[in-house]
Length: 594
Ligand SMILES: Nc1ncnc2c1ncn2[C@@H]1O[C@H](COP(=O)(O)OP(=O)(O)OP(=O)(O)O)[C@@H](O)[C@H]1O
Image 1 (cartoon, rainbow, N blue to C red):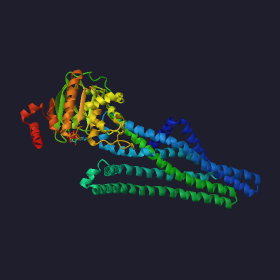
Image 2: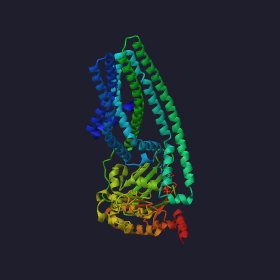
Image 3: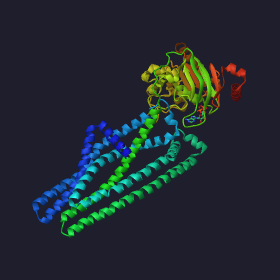
Image 4: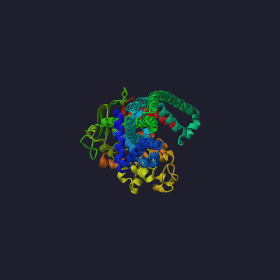
Protein backbone atom coordinates (compact mmCIF):
# COMPACT_ATOMS: atom_id res chain seq x y z
CA UNK A 1 0.00 0.00 0.00
CA UNK A 2 2.86 2.35 0.92
CA UNK A 3 4.56 1.62 -2.42
CA UNK A 4 1.28 2.22 -4.23
CA UNK A 5 0.58 5.52 -2.50
CA UNK A 6 4.11 6.81 -2.88
CA UNK A 7 4.14 5.73 -6.55
CA UNK A 8 0.79 7.49 -7.13
CA UNK A 9 2.06 10.56 -5.34
CA UNK A 10 5.29 10.59 -7.37
CA UNK A 11 3.30 10.32 -10.59
CA UNK A 12 0.87 13.12 -9.84
CA UNK A 13 3.69 15.31 -8.48
CA UNK A 14 5.66 14.65 -11.67
CA UNK A 15 2.66 15.51 -13.85
CA UNK A 16 2.03 18.69 -11.82
CA UNK A 17 5.69 19.72 -12.02
CA UNK A 18 5.71 19.18 -15.79
CA UNK A 19 2.49 21.06 -16.56
CA UNK A 20 0.18 22.15 -13.71
CA UNK A 21 -2.47 23.57 -16.08
CA UNK A 22 -2.80 20.37 -18.12
CA UNK A 23 -2.74 18.25 -14.95
CA UNK A 24 -5.59 20.27 -13.43
CA UNK A 25 -7.54 20.14 -16.70
CA UNK A 26 -7.08 16.38 -16.98
CA UNK A 27 -8.19 15.83 -13.37
CA UNK A 28 -11.29 18.02 -13.87
CA UNK A 29 -12.27 16.36 -17.16
CA UNK A 30 -11.71 12.83 -15.90
CA UNK A 31 -13.59 13.54 -12.68
CA UNK A 32 -16.51 15.19 -14.47
CA UNK A 33 -16.72 12.27 -16.91
CA UNK A 34 -16.66 9.76 -14.06
CA UNK A 35 -19.36 11.39 -11.89
CA UNK A 36 -21.58 11.91 -14.95
CA UNK A 37 -22.25 8.13 -14.99
CA UNK A 38 -23.90 7.78 -11.53
CA UNK A 39 -25.73 11.08 -12.12
CA UNK A 40 -27.03 9.56 -15.34
CA UNK A 41 -28.46 6.65 -13.33
CA UNK A 42 -30.16 9.11 -10.97
CA UNK A 43 -31.58 11.05 -13.94
CA UNK A 44 -32.87 7.82 -15.51
CA UNK A 45 -34.63 6.91 -12.26
CA UNK A 46 -36.15 10.40 -12.08
CA UNK A 47 -37.31 10.28 -15.71
CA UNK A 48 -38.88 6.84 -15.20
CA UNK A 49 -40.74 8.06 -12.10
CA UNK A 50 -42.10 11.13 -14.00
CA UNK A 51 -43.10 9.02 -17.00
CA UNK A 52 -44.92 6.48 -14.75
CA UNK A 53 -46.61 9.40 -12.93
CA UNK A 54 -47.64 10.86 -16.33
CA UNK A 55 -46.00 14.27 -15.60
CA UNK A 56 -45.07 15.36 -19.12
CA UNK A 57 -43.06 18.55 -18.45
CA UNK A 58 -40.83 17.13 -15.66
CA UNK A 59 -40.39 13.94 -17.73
CA UNK A 60 -39.11 16.02 -20.71
CA UNK A 61 -36.79 17.95 -18.36
CA UNK A 62 -35.48 14.71 -16.86
CA UNK A 63 -35.09 13.29 -20.39
CA UNK A 64 -32.99 16.32 -21.38
CA UNK A 65 -30.87 15.77 -18.24
CA UNK A 66 -30.38 12.12 -19.23
CA UNK A 67 -29.30 13.17 -22.72
CA UNK A 68 -26.81 15.79 -21.48
CA UNK A 69 -25.33 13.44 -18.85
CA UNK A 70 -25.10 10.56 -21.34
CA UNK A 71 -23.18 12.78 -23.77
CA UNK A 72 -20.89 14.04 -20.98
CA UNK A 73 -20.21 10.53 -19.68
CA UNK A 74 -19.24 9.37 -23.16
CA UNK A 75 -17.39 12.43 -24.46
CA UNK A 76 -15.48 13.93 -21.52
CA UNK A 77 -13.11 11.00 -21.28
CA UNK A 78 -11.95 11.68 -24.87
CA UNK A 79 -11.11 15.28 -24.04
CA UNK A 80 -9.39 14.15 -20.85
CA UNK A 81 -7.33 11.78 -22.99
CA UNK A 82 -6.09 14.75 -25.02
CA UNK A 83 -4.97 16.50 -21.85
CA UNK A 84 -3.09 13.60 -20.33
CA UNK A 85 -1.65 12.32 -23.60
CA UNK A 86 0.82 15.20 -23.66
CA UNK A 87 1.40 14.90 -19.91
CA UNK A 88 2.16 11.21 -20.29
CA UNK A 89 4.64 11.92 -23.12
CA UNK A 90 6.42 14.50 -20.95
CA UNK A 91 6.34 12.21 -17.93
CA UNK A 92 7.74 9.28 -19.94
CA UNK A 93 10.60 11.51 -21.05
CA UNK A 94 11.10 12.57 -17.43
CA UNK A 95 11.20 8.91 -16.32
CA UNK A 96 13.76 8.08 -19.04
CA UNK A 97 15.86 11.04 -17.98
CA UNK A 98 15.79 9.84 -14.37
CA UNK A 99 16.86 6.36 -15.47
CA UNK A 100 19.73 7.92 -17.46
CA UNK A 101 20.60 10.15 -14.49
CA UNK A 102 20.65 7.21 -12.07
CA UNK A 103 22.56 5.12 -14.59
CA UNK A 104 25.25 7.82 -14.62
CA UNK A 105 24.73 8.86 -11.01
CA UNK A 106 27.87 7.29 -9.64
CA UNK A 107 31.48 8.01 -10.42
CA UNK A 108 32.06 4.26 -10.52
CA UNK A 109 30.57 1.61 -12.77
CA UNK A 110 29.79 -0.99 -10.12
CA UNK A 111 26.01 -0.65 -10.43
CA UNK A 112 26.29 -1.59 -14.12
CA UNK A 113 28.66 -4.49 -13.66
CA UNK A 114 26.96 -6.19 -10.69
CA UNK A 115 24.72 -9.10 -11.69
CA UNK A 116 22.09 -8.40 -9.00
CA UNK A 117 21.27 -5.01 -10.56
CA UNK A 118 20.98 -6.39 -14.08
CA UNK A 119 17.37 -7.58 -13.62
CA UNK A 120 16.32 -4.21 -12.23
CA UNK A 121 17.80 -2.39 -15.22
CA UNK A 122 16.00 -4.79 -17.61
CA UNK A 123 12.63 -4.14 -15.93
CA UNK A 124 13.25 -0.38 -15.73
CA UNK A 125 14.10 -0.10 -19.42
CA UNK A 126 10.78 -1.80 -20.24
CA UNK A 127 8.54 -0.19 -17.62
CA UNK A 128 9.39 3.42 -18.50
CA UNK A 129 7.42 2.95 -21.70
CA UNK A 130 4.28 2.16 -19.68
CA UNK A 131 4.08 5.49 -17.96
CA UNK A 132 1.03 6.48 -19.97
CA UNK A 133 -1.09 3.63 -18.65
CA UNK A 134 0.15 4.43 -15.12
CA UNK A 135 -0.89 8.07 -15.38
CA UNK A 136 -4.15 7.13 -17.06
CA UNK A 137 -4.78 4.73 -14.19
CA UNK A 138 -4.03 7.38 -11.61
CA UNK A 139 -6.29 10.04 -13.13
CA UNK A 140 -8.97 7.47 -13.90
CA UNK A 141 -8.63 6.26 -10.31
CA UNK A 142 -9.30 9.73 -8.93
CA UNK A 143 -12.49 9.98 -11.00
CA UNK A 144 -13.42 6.44 -10.05
CA UNK A 145 -13.15 7.11 -6.32
CA UNK A 146 -15.53 10.09 -6.69
CA UNK A 147 -17.91 8.11 -8.87
CA UNK A 148 -17.93 5.26 -6.36
CA UNK A 149 -18.60 7.66 -3.47
CA UNK A 150 -21.52 9.24 -5.34
CA UNK A 151 -22.85 5.83 -6.26
CA UNK A 152 -22.64 4.77 -2.60
CA UNK A 153 -24.64 7.83 -1.51
CA UNK A 154 -27.35 7.18 -4.12
CA UNK A 155 -27.56 3.49 -3.17
CA UNK A 156 -27.67 4.24 0.58
CA UNK A 157 -30.57 6.62 -0.06
CA UNK A 158 -32.49 3.68 -1.53
CA UNK A 159 -31.62 1.09 1.09
CA UNK A 160 -28.63 1.21 3.49
CA UNK A 161 -28.19 -2.51 2.91
CA UNK A 162 -27.21 -1.68 -0.67
CA UNK A 163 -24.02 -0.13 0.73
CA UNK A 164 -22.80 -3.69 0.97
CA UNK A 165 -22.54 -3.55 -2.80
CA UNK A 166 -19.57 -1.11 -2.95
CA UNK A 167 -18.16 -2.90 0.11
CA UNK A 168 -18.26 -6.11 -1.92
CA UNK A 169 -15.85 -4.33 -4.26
CA UNK A 170 -13.08 -4.91 -1.72
CA UNK A 171 -12.45 -8.63 -2.46
CA UNK A 172 -11.92 -8.11 -6.23
CA UNK A 173 -9.68 -5.13 -5.49
CA UNK A 174 -7.57 -7.09 -3.02
CA UNK A 175 -7.52 -10.05 -5.37
CA UNK A 176 -6.40 -7.72 -8.18
CA UNK A 177 -3.49 -6.49 -6.10
CA UNK A 178 -2.49 -10.02 -5.12
CA UNK A 179 -2.65 -11.02 -8.79
CA UNK A 180 -0.40 -8.10 -9.78
CA UNK A 181 2.12 -9.11 -7.10
CA UNK A 182 2.23 -12.61 -8.59
CA UNK A 183 2.86 -11.10 -12.03
CA UNK A 184 5.51 -8.70 -10.71
CA UNK A 185 7.41 -11.57 -9.08
CA UNK A 186 7.20 -13.55 -12.33
CA UNK A 187 8.48 -10.58 -14.36
CA UNK A 188 11.51 -10.28 -12.07
CA UNK A 189 12.10 -14.04 -12.09
CA UNK A 190 11.98 -14.16 -15.90
CA UNK A 191 14.07 -11.01 -16.39
CA UNK A 192 17.26 -13.03 -16.87
CA UNK A 193 16.05 -15.32 -19.71
CA UNK A 194 14.24 -12.30 -21.21
CA UNK A 195 17.43 -10.25 -21.14
CA UNK A 196 19.52 -13.07 -22.59
CA UNK A 197 16.94 -13.69 -25.31
CA UNK A 198 16.90 -9.97 -26.18
CA UNK A 199 20.68 -10.04 -26.39
CA UNK A 200 20.54 -13.04 -28.74
CA UNK A 201 17.89 -11.29 -30.83
CA UNK A 202 20.19 -8.28 -31.11
CA UNK A 203 23.11 -10.51 -32.11
CA UNK A 204 21.03 -12.39 -34.66
CA UNK A 205 19.72 -9.21 -36.32
CA UNK A 206 22.76 -6.94 -36.08
CA UNK A 207 24.15 -5.87 -39.44
CA UNK A 208 27.63 -5.51 -37.92
CA UNK A 209 27.76 -9.13 -36.81
CA UNK A 210 25.95 -10.68 -39.78
CA UNK A 211 29.20 -11.78 -41.49
CA UNK A 212 30.63 -13.69 -38.52
CA UNK A 213 27.30 -15.41 -37.87
CA UNK A 214 27.10 -16.59 -41.45
CA UNK A 215 30.67 -17.85 -41.61
CA UNK A 216 30.36 -19.76 -38.36
CA UNK A 217 26.86 -20.84 -39.43
CA UNK A 218 25.46 -20.34 -35.98
CA UNK A 219 22.24 -18.57 -37.04
CA UNK A 220 20.20 -21.73 -36.44
CA UNK A 221 21.87 -22.31 -33.08
CA UNK A 222 21.21 -18.71 -31.99
CA UNK A 223 17.59 -18.98 -33.10
CA UNK A 224 17.18 -22.24 -31.18
CA UNK A 225 18.71 -20.74 -28.03
CA UNK A 226 16.59 -17.61 -28.45
CA UNK A 227 13.45 -19.75 -28.80
CA UNK A 228 14.35 -21.84 -25.75
CA UNK A 229 14.90 -18.74 -23.61
CA UNK A 230 11.66 -17.10 -24.78
CA UNK A 231 9.81 -20.33 -24.09
CA UNK A 232 11.31 -20.45 -20.61
CA UNK A 233 10.34 -16.82 -19.94
CA UNK A 234 6.89 -17.25 -21.49
CA UNK A 235 6.24 -20.44 -19.51
CA UNK A 236 7.05 -18.62 -16.27
CA UNK A 237 4.89 -15.65 -17.25
CA UNK A 238 2.03 -17.84 -18.48
CA UNK A 239 1.92 -19.73 -15.17
CA UNK A 240 1.84 -16.41 -13.32
CA UNK A 241 -0.93 -15.09 -15.63
CA UNK A 242 -2.95 -18.25 -14.98
CA UNK A 243 -2.59 -17.88 -11.21
CA UNK A 244 -3.40 -14.16 -11.46
CA UNK A 245 -6.53 -14.88 -13.53
CA UNK A 246 -7.79 -17.44 -11.00
CA UNK A 247 -7.19 -15.00 -8.11
CA UNK A 248 -8.94 -12.16 -9.99
CA UNK A 249 -11.91 -14.38 -10.95
CA UNK A 250 -12.36 -15.48 -7.32
CA UNK A 251 -12.60 -11.84 -6.26
CA UNK A 252 -15.11 -11.06 -9.04
CA UNK A 253 -17.34 -14.00 -8.03
CA UNK A 254 -17.76 -12.48 -4.55
CA UNK A 255 -18.89 -9.23 -6.11
CA UNK A 256 -21.21 -10.92 -8.60
CA UNK A 257 -23.05 -12.64 -5.74
CA UNK A 258 -23.46 -9.30 -3.91
CA UNK A 259 -24.74 -7.69 -7.15
CA UNK A 260 -27.43 -10.32 -7.64
CA UNK A 261 -28.46 -10.01 -3.97
CA UNK A 262 -28.70 -6.20 -4.24
CA UNK A 263 -30.93 -6.28 -7.32
CA UNK A 264 -33.18 -8.93 -5.75
CA UNK A 265 -33.52 -6.75 -2.63
CA UNK A 266 -34.92 -3.78 -4.58
CA UNK A 267 -37.12 -5.96 -6.78
CA UNK A 268 -38.60 -7.49 -3.57
CA UNK A 269 -39.25 -3.95 -2.19
CA UNK A 270 -40.92 -2.97 -5.46
CA UNK A 271 -43.12 -6.07 -5.45
CA UNK A 272 -44.12 -5.27 -1.87
CA UNK A 273 -45.08 -1.75 -3.05
CA UNK A 274 -42.40 0.00 -1.00
CA UNK A 275 -40.50 1.17 -4.14
CA UNK A 276 -41.51 2.45 -7.56
CA UNK A 277 -40.29 1.42 -11.02
CA UNK A 278 -37.99 4.48 -11.09
CA UNK A 279 -36.16 3.21 -8.00
CA UNK A 280 -35.72 -0.23 -9.56
CA UNK A 281 -34.29 1.37 -12.74
CA UNK A 282 -31.99 3.55 -10.61
CA UNK A 283 -30.64 0.61 -8.60
CA UNK A 284 -30.28 -1.75 -11.56
CA UNK A 285 -28.31 0.89 -13.54
CA UNK A 286 -26.22 1.90 -10.49
CA UNK A 287 -25.48 -1.71 -9.54
CA UNK A 288 -24.33 -2.37 -13.11
CA UNK A 289 -22.13 0.72 -12.84
CA UNK A 290 -20.63 -0.52 -9.56
CA UNK A 291 -19.77 -3.72 -11.39
CA UNK A 292 -18.15 -1.69 -14.16
CA UNK A 293 -16.40 0.54 -11.61
CA UNK A 294 -14.96 -2.47 -9.81
CA UNK A 295 -13.70 -4.07 -13.03
CA UNK A 296 -12.11 -0.75 -14.03
CA UNK A 297 -10.65 -0.30 -10.55
CA UNK A 298 -8.98 -3.72 -10.75
CA UNK A 299 -7.35 -2.88 -14.10
CA UNK A 300 -6.39 0.62 -12.98
CA UNK A 301 -4.96 -0.69 -9.77
CA UNK A 302 -2.88 -3.20 -11.72
CA UNK A 303 -1.45 -0.45 -13.95
CA UNK A 304 -0.92 1.81 -10.99
CA UNK A 305 0.81 -0.90 -9.02
CA UNK A 306 3.04 -1.70 -11.98
CA UNK A 307 4.09 1.93 -12.34
CA UNK A 308 4.52 2.30 -8.59
CA UNK A 309 6.74 -0.82 -8.70
CA UNK A 310 8.87 0.80 -11.43
CA UNK A 311 9.29 3.93 -9.28
CA UNK A 312 10.19 1.78 -6.26
CA UNK A 313 12.88 0.02 -8.29
CA UNK A 314 14.20 3.30 -9.62
CA UNK A 315 14.35 4.74 -6.11
CA UNK A 316 16.13 1.62 -4.80
CA UNK A 317 18.79 1.73 -7.53
CA UNK A 318 19.13 5.50 -7.10
CA UNK A 319 19.67 5.01 -3.36
CA UNK A 320 22.20 2.22 -3.85
CA UNK A 321 24.02 4.33 -6.46
CA UNK A 322 24.00 7.36 -4.14
CA UNK A 323 25.06 5.13 -1.20
CA UNK A 324 27.98 3.77 -3.20
CA UNK A 325 29.31 7.28 -3.84
CA UNK A 326 31.74 8.22 -1.09
CA UNK A 327 31.61 11.73 0.36
CA UNK A 328 33.50 14.15 -1.86
CA UNK A 329 37.02 14.72 -0.60
CA UNK A 330 38.36 18.24 -0.55
CA UNK A 331 41.68 17.77 -2.40
CA UNK A 332 42.45 18.29 -6.06
CA UNK A 333 44.92 16.65 -8.46
CA UNK A 334 48.29 18.34 -8.90
CA UNK A 335 48.63 20.76 -11.83
CA UNK A 336 51.63 18.76 -13.06
CA UNK A 337 53.21 15.46 -12.10
CA UNK A 338 56.72 15.59 -10.71
CA UNK A 339 57.18 12.13 -9.27
CA UNK A 340 54.45 10.11 -11.01
CA UNK A 341 51.80 7.58 -10.01
CA UNK A 342 52.55 5.01 -7.35
CA UNK A 343 50.55 1.83 -6.63
CA UNK A 344 51.35 0.61 -3.16
CA UNK A 345 50.16 -2.82 -1.96
CA UNK A 346 47.09 -2.56 -4.23
CA UNK A 347 44.63 -5.46 -4.11
CA UNK A 348 41.20 -5.62 -5.67
CA UNK A 349 38.16 -7.90 -5.50
CA UNK A 350 35.09 -7.09 -7.63
CA UNK A 351 32.07 -6.28 -5.41
CA UNK A 352 29.83 -9.31 -5.01
CA UNK A 353 32.66 -11.76 -5.82
CA UNK A 354 35.03 -13.61 -3.51
CA UNK A 355 38.29 -14.10 -5.40
CA UNK A 356 40.75 -11.19 -5.59
CA UNK A 357 41.60 -10.17 -9.16
CA UNK A 358 44.65 -8.09 -8.19
CA UNK A 359 47.04 -8.82 -5.29
CA UNK A 360 49.93 -6.93 -3.74
CA UNK A 361 50.55 -4.69 -6.74
CA UNK A 362 53.49 -2.35 -6.13
CA UNK A 363 54.38 -0.16 -9.07
CA UNK A 364 55.90 3.20 -9.79
CA UNK A 365 54.80 4.87 -13.02
CA UNK A 366 57.34 7.71 -13.40
CA UNK A 367 56.15 11.16 -14.48
CA UNK A 368 56.48 11.69 -18.22
CA UNK A 369 56.85 7.97 -19.03
CA UNK A 370 55.01 5.62 -21.36
CA UNK A 371 54.03 2.39 -19.63
CA UNK A 372 52.89 -0.78 -21.39
CA UNK A 373 50.90 -3.39 -19.51
CA UNK A 374 51.06 -6.89 -20.92
CA UNK A 375 49.85 -10.26 -19.77
CA UNK A 376 47.61 -13.16 -20.66
CA UNK A 377 43.85 -12.82 -21.08
CA UNK A 378 42.17 -12.40 -17.71
CA UNK A 379 45.44 -11.48 -15.99
CA UNK A 380 43.96 -8.26 -14.58
CA UNK A 381 45.25 -5.59 -17.02
CA UNK A 382 41.87 -3.89 -17.61
CA UNK A 383 41.11 -4.06 -13.91
CA UNK A 384 44.32 -2.16 -13.21
CA UNK A 385 43.20 0.44 -15.77
CA UNK A 386 39.76 0.71 -14.11
CA UNK A 387 41.43 1.44 -10.76
CA UNK A 388 43.65 4.10 -12.34
CA UNK A 389 40.58 5.75 -13.90
CA UNK A 390 38.81 5.69 -10.53
CA UNK A 391 35.94 3.41 -11.67
CA UNK A 392 36.61 1.38 -8.52
CA UNK A 393 38.59 1.98 -5.33
CA UNK A 394 41.27 -0.58 -4.43
CA UNK A 395 40.07 -3.10 -1.83
CA UNK A 396 43.45 -2.69 -0.13
CA UNK A 397 46.50 -0.52 -0.66
CA UNK A 398 46.73 2.96 -2.17
CA UNK A 399 47.15 4.71 -5.49
CA UNK A 400 49.25 7.83 -4.98
CA UNK A 401 49.42 10.69 -7.47
CA UNK A 402 52.58 12.60 -6.65
CA UNK A 403 52.21 11.32 -3.10
CA UNK A 404 48.52 12.26 -2.73
CA UNK A 405 46.11 9.33 -2.23
CA UNK A 406 43.64 9.12 -5.15
CA UNK A 407 40.91 8.53 -2.54
CA UNK A 408 41.42 12.13 -1.39
CA UNK A 409 40.95 13.56 -4.88
CA UNK A 410 37.36 14.23 -6.07
CA UNK A 411 36.86 11.69 -8.82
CA UNK A 412 35.38 14.24 -11.23
CA UNK A 413 38.46 16.43 -10.91
CA UNK A 414 40.68 13.42 -11.54
CA UNK A 415 38.61 12.47 -14.59
CA UNK A 416 38.96 16.00 -15.94
CA UNK A 417 42.75 15.48 -15.92
CA UNK A 418 42.81 12.06 -17.56
CA UNK A 419 42.03 10.86 -21.07
CA UNK A 420 41.19 7.35 -22.13
CA UNK A 421 40.59 5.15 -25.15
CA UNK A 422 39.02 1.75 -24.69
CA UNK A 423 38.68 -1.32 -26.87
CA UNK A 424 34.95 -1.12 -26.27
CA UNK A 425 34.57 2.42 -27.50
CA UNK A 426 31.42 4.43 -28.11
CA UNK A 427 30.14 4.85 -31.67
CA UNK A 428 28.40 8.21 -31.39
CA UNK A 429 26.14 8.64 -34.39
CA UNK A 430 26.86 12.39 -34.66
CA UNK A 431 28.73 14.58 -37.15
CA UNK A 432 32.44 13.58 -37.23
CA UNK A 433 33.36 16.90 -35.57
CA UNK A 434 31.50 15.92 -32.43
CA UNK A 435 32.35 12.21 -32.60
CA UNK A 436 35.93 13.34 -31.95
CA UNK A 437 35.27 16.63 -30.14
CA UNK A 438 33.30 15.02 -27.32
CA UNK A 439 36.64 13.90 -25.88
CA UNK A 440 36.94 17.41 -24.48
CA UNK A 441 33.43 18.80 -24.15
CA UNK A 442 34.30 22.51 -23.81
CA UNK A 443 36.21 22.34 -27.13
CA UNK A 444 33.84 19.91 -28.88
CA UNK A 445 32.99 22.44 -31.61
CA UNK A 446 36.53 23.66 -32.18
CA UNK A 447 37.66 22.47 -35.62
CA UNK A 448 41.38 23.17 -35.06
CA UNK A 449 41.27 21.22 -31.76
CA UNK A 450 39.60 18.24 -33.47
CA UNK A 451 42.04 18.28 -36.39
CA UNK A 452 45.00 18.44 -33.99
CA UNK A 453 43.59 15.51 -31.98
CA UNK A 454 43.10 13.45 -35.13
CA UNK A 455 46.66 14.27 -36.09
CA UNK A 456 47.98 13.06 -32.73
CA UNK A 457 45.94 9.87 -33.16
CA UNK A 458 47.36 9.41 -36.68
CA UNK A 459 43.74 9.36 -37.80
CA UNK A 460 43.49 12.43 -40.08
CA UNK A 461 43.25 10.12 -43.12
CA UNK A 462 39.78 8.96 -41.99
CA UNK A 463 38.44 12.37 -43.05
CA UNK A 464 39.51 11.69 -46.66
CA UNK A 465 36.78 9.06 -46.90
CA UNK A 466 34.05 11.24 -45.42
CA UNK A 467 32.10 13.09 -48.14
CA UNK A 468 31.54 16.18 -46.06
CA UNK A 469 34.69 16.05 -43.92
CA UNK A 470 34.12 16.86 -40.25
CA UNK A 471 30.51 17.78 -40.99
CA UNK A 472 29.66 14.27 -42.23
CA UNK A 473 27.03 12.54 -40.12
CA UNK A 474 28.27 9.13 -39.06
CA UNK A 475 26.23 5.99 -38.50
CA UNK A 476 23.01 4.52 -39.76
CA UNK A 477 20.64 6.61 -37.65
CA UNK A 478 20.63 9.15 -40.47
CA UNK A 479 19.53 8.30 -43.97
CA UNK A 480 22.56 10.11 -45.45
CA UNK A 481 24.99 9.07 -42.68
CA UNK A 482 28.36 7.61 -43.66
CA UNK A 483 29.36 4.27 -42.18
CA UNK A 484 33.10 4.15 -41.37
CA UNK A 485 34.88 0.80 -41.22
CA UNK A 486 35.62 -0.81 -37.83
CA UNK A 487 39.22 0.49 -37.91
CA UNK A 488 38.08 3.97 -38.94
CA UNK A 489 35.60 4.10 -36.05
CA UNK A 490 38.42 3.07 -33.76
CA UNK A 491 40.74 5.75 -35.16
CA UNK A 492 38.04 8.38 -34.55
CA UNK A 493 37.65 7.07 -30.98
CA UNK A 494 41.41 7.41 -30.55
CA UNK A 495 41.21 10.96 -31.84
CA UNK A 496 38.58 11.52 -29.16
CA UNK A 497 40.95 10.16 -26.51
CA UNK A 498 43.59 12.60 -27.77
CA UNK A 499 41.34 15.66 -27.48
CA UNK A 500 42.73 16.55 -24.08
CA UNK A 501 46.14 17.90 -24.96
CA UNK A 502 47.98 17.50 -21.70
CA UNK A 503 46.33 14.95 -19.41
CA UNK A 504 48.10 13.78 -16.25
CA UNK A 505 47.22 10.24 -17.29
CA UNK A 506 46.36 8.90 -20.72
CA UNK A 507 45.01 5.38 -20.63
CA UNK A 508 44.75 3.32 -23.80
CA UNK A 509 43.21 -0.08 -23.10
CA UNK A 510 43.67 -2.01 -26.33
CA UNK A 511 42.13 0.83 -28.33
CA UNK A 512 44.02 -0.20 -31.44
CA UNK A 513 42.89 -3.81 -31.78
CA UNK A 514 41.09 -3.01 -35.08
CA UNK A 515 44.23 -1.38 -36.52
CA UNK A 516 46.90 -3.25 -38.38
CA UNK A 517 50.22 -3.70 -36.48
CA UNK A 518 52.02 -1.05 -38.58
CA UNK A 519 49.24 1.47 -38.00
CA UNK A 520 49.32 0.72 -34.29
CA UNK A 521 53.09 1.06 -34.21
CA UNK A 522 53.02 4.35 -36.14
CA UNK A 523 50.31 5.69 -33.88
CA UNK A 524 52.19 4.90 -30.70
CA UNK A 525 55.40 6.32 -32.11
CA UNK A 526 53.62 9.53 -33.01
CA UNK A 527 51.83 9.67 -29.70
CA UNK A 528 54.96 8.86 -27.69
CA UNK A 529 56.74 11.80 -29.41
CA UNK A 530 53.84 14.09 -28.53
CA UNK A 531 53.69 12.68 -24.99
CA UNK A 532 57.40 13.35 -24.51
CA UNK A 533 56.92 16.93 -25.68
CA UNK A 534 54.03 17.64 -23.29
CA UNK A 535 55.56 15.55 -20.49
CA UNK A 536 57.99 18.42 -19.93
CA UNK A 537 55.00 20.61 -19.16
CA UNK A 538 52.68 18.25 -17.27
CA UNK A 539 54.72 15.14 -16.45
CA UNK A 540 51.77 13.13 -17.79
CA UNK A 541 51.95 9.33 -17.76
CA UNK A 542 50.73 7.24 -20.69
CA UNK A 543 49.54 3.73 -19.83
CA UNK A 544 48.62 1.39 -22.63
CA UNK A 545 47.47 -2.19 -22.71
CA UNK A 546 48.48 -4.07 -25.83
CA UNK A 547 49.16 -7.60 -26.95
CA UNK A 548 51.47 -6.39 -29.76
CA UNK A 549 55.06 -6.52 -28.68
CA UNK A 550 56.31 -4.43 -31.59
CA UNK A 551 54.51 -1.53 -29.89
CA UNK A 552 55.08 -2.65 -26.33
CA UNK A 553 58.85 -2.70 -26.75
CA UNK A 554 58.89 1.07 -27.35
CA UNK A 555 57.53 1.80 -23.85
CA UNK A 556 59.76 3.27 -21.15
CA UNK A 557 58.38 0.77 -18.67
CA UNK A 558 56.82 -2.61 -19.43
CA UNK A 559 54.74 -4.22 -16.70
CA UNK A 560 53.99 -7.91 -17.04
CA UNK A 561 50.85 -8.92 -15.14
CA UNK A 562 50.11 -12.55 -14.40
CA UNK A 563 47.35 -13.96 -12.24
CA UNK A 564 46.66 -10.58 -10.63
CA UNK A 565 50.29 -9.86 -9.67
CA UNK A 566 53.11 -7.89 -11.23
CA UNK A 567 55.39 -10.62 -12.49
CA UNK A 568 58.07 -8.40 -14.01
CA UNK A 569 58.65 -4.73 -14.72
CA UNK A 570 61.39 -2.89 -16.61
CA UNK A 571 62.24 -1.61 -20.07
CA UNK A 572 62.55 -3.88 -23.10
CA UNK A 573 66.31 -4.35 -22.84
CA UNK A 574 66.20 -5.14 -19.11
CA UNK A 575 63.35 -7.63 -19.47
CA UNK A 576 64.99 -9.40 -22.43
CA UNK A 577 68.19 -9.62 -20.40
CA UNK A 578 66.24 -11.06 -17.45
CA UNK A 579 65.07 -13.87 -19.76
CA UNK A 580 61.77 -14.21 -17.94
CA UNK A 581 58.11 -14.28 -19.04
CA UNK A 582 58.41 -11.14 -21.20
CA UNK A 583 61.44 -12.45 -23.06
CA UNK A 584 59.63 -15.72 -23.69
CA UNK A 585 56.44 -14.02 -24.96
CA UNK A 586 58.45 -11.58 -27.09
CA UNK A 587 60.43 -14.39 -28.69
CA UNK A 588 57.22 -16.30 -29.43
CA UNK A 589 55.61 -13.33 -31.16
CA UNK A 590 58.78 -12.39 -33.04
CA UNK A 591 58.99 -15.98 -34.33
CA UNK A 592 55.36 -15.87 -35.43
CA UNK A 593 56.02 -12.70 -37.46
CA UNK A 594 59.33 -13.79 -38.98
N1 LIG B 1 32.89 -6.70 -13.58
C1 LIG B 1 33.52 -7.81 -13.17
N2 LIG B 1 33.00 -8.53 -12.15
C2 LIG B 1 33.63 -9.65 -11.71
N3 LIG B 1 34.79 -10.12 -12.24
C3 LIG B 1 35.34 -9.45 -13.25
C4 LIG B 1 34.73 -8.25 -13.79
N4 LIG B 1 35.51 -7.80 -14.79
C5 LIG B 1 36.56 -8.67 -14.90
N5 LIG B 1 36.44 -9.63 -13.98
C6 LIG B 1 37.40 -10.74 -13.76
O1 LIG B 1 38.65 -10.20 -13.43
C7 LIG B 1 39.70 -10.93 -14.01
C8 LIG B 1 40.64 -9.97 -14.75
O2 LIG B 1 39.92 -9.39 -15.81
P1 LIG B 1 40.53 -8.22 -16.70
O3 LIG B 1 39.47 -7.76 -17.63
O4 LIG B 1 41.18 -7.23 -15.83
O5 LIG B 1 41.66 -9.03 -17.51
P2 LIG B 1 42.59 -8.57 -18.71
O6 LIG B 1 43.99 -8.90 -18.30
O7 LIG B 1 42.31 -7.17 -19.12
O8 LIG B 1 42.12 -9.57 -19.85
P3 LIG B 1 42.06 -9.40 -21.46
O9 LIG B 1 43.44 -9.42 -21.99
O10 LIG B 1 41.33 -10.63 -21.85
O11 LIG B 1 41.30 -8.15 -21.75
C9 LIG B 1 39.06 -11.97 -14.92
O12 LIG B 1 39.09 -13.21 -14.23
C10 LIG B 1 37.63 -11.51 -15.06
O13 LIG B 1 36.77 -12.60 -15.12
